[in-house]
Length: 64
Image (cartoon, rainbow, N blue to C red; front, top):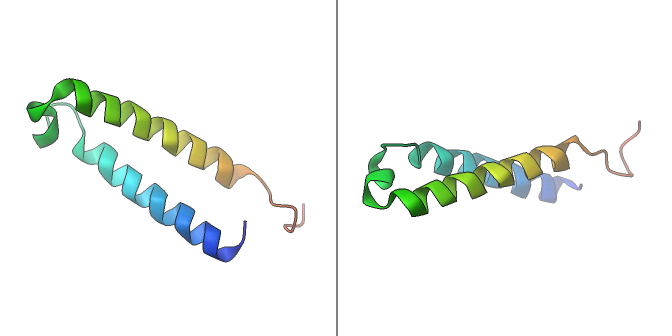
């Protein structure tokens, strides 16, 4: 990944983590619509796992 892409991924990861935090069970959003918030939380955690895998991959320009 080039520097610009890394910054976008890092920013996205930070914001998704914030989203997971506000979607905690019995949090302010959870009370409004538990089913939707649970779905958002699951999807966000999936995205964080995918970002983690992406960050773990070495780009071709990175020496081994």
